[in-house]
Length: 410
Image 1 (cartoon, rainbow, N blue to C red):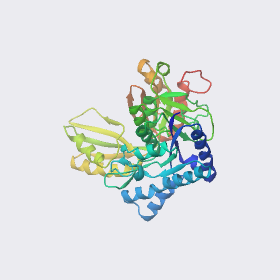
Image 2: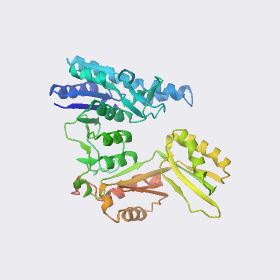
Image 3: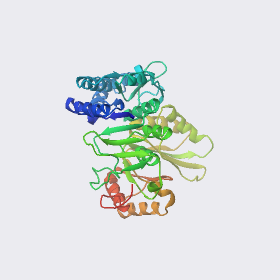
Image 4: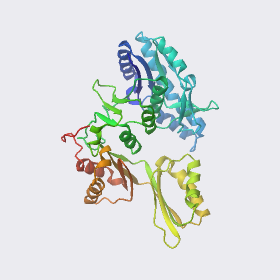
C-alpha cells in the first residue's frame, strides 16, 4: 500500500462537525492499509483572529512574538483532529513543528523550510499510527518558532511528503481542484484534470489561491505528485505532475489575477552603475519580494524605474525607497496601491505565436490600459487598474476559450 500525506485547510476544519468529517476521511484512507500523515491548517478565520489580537496590542507587533501567537491556531486543529481519530479507535499522535524538527531560516512571518527530520514520523508509521502534524510552522536554529506565510501548510505538507518519501500529497480544500480561473468571477470556469508543475507554479505565483508557490517548488524539485481535491466530495480533483505532450497541446491553461500588489516608481534616477543595487538592497534585506521591474530608456543621463511589491509590504518598501531616493538624488517617489495583475498561463505558449497579441487586443477592446508587462516561456502578465480586474479576467477567459463549453484537452 501507499504512504499518503493529506493536508486539510482551514475551511475543511472550520468547526467540530467538519473536523469529524475529516477524521472519517482519514480513517477510510488508513483502513485501506495506507500509511497516513496528516498536516493541518488552523480552523477557518483563526489566524486572522490571532493577528488581529496582535494589532490590538500594537500597530507594529514584534515579528518573533507574532509568529509565536500565529502558530497556536494549527496546534488547536492538530490536537482536535487527533482526538477525533482516537474516538474512532484509530491509533494516532499529534506533533507541532519542534517535535518533528521542521527546521527553517529565521525570516519570521515568511520563513523557508530547510529540512525535516522524519525519524519520529517513520517510527510512528511503523506502529500503524496516523501522524497528525501542525502545518504553517517551523523552528529556526535558535529554537524560535517561525511561520511560513499564508498558505504555508501546503508547503509543510509537501516538505513532509518529501522527507518521508510519500507516494502522493493530497491537498484537501473547499474546491474540487484547480480551475481555469476563479469560478466566482467566471461561473463557466472549468476544472483541470491535470496540470504541469511549471504551469501550477506560475498560476500560484500569479494569484491563484489553491496552492502556495513554495509547495509547488518543493513538489517539482522532488517529483512529488500533488492531488488537489475537495474535502466534501469523493470526486477526483486536479493532479499536479510532470509536463507531457497533451499539456503542450493546450495553448492557455488558465487566467489568474492578483490584487495584492502595489506599484512604486522612482523618477529621474541618475543612470549609472550601482544605482539599482542601492535601491533594491535595503528592500531585499527587509525580506520584501520584488515582482515586476521596468526601467525606462535613459534620457539626458536619467531614467525612471518602476516595480511592484506585495501590498502587505508596501508601506515598509515605500519608506525604504524614499530614504534611498534622497541618497541618490532621484526626483521623486510615486506610489500606486490600486493596481492588479492579470495573467495567462499555458505550457503550449512555448510553441504558439500570437498569444501576446491576442491578449493585448482583448484588453484594448475593453478600454483597459496596460501599465506594465512581464513574460516568461509559459506566461504573460499585465498590470492594470484594479477596478478592471474582473472584467479583464472574464474577457481573457473568453478570448482563449477556456469555459466549460469548450472541448479542450487538459
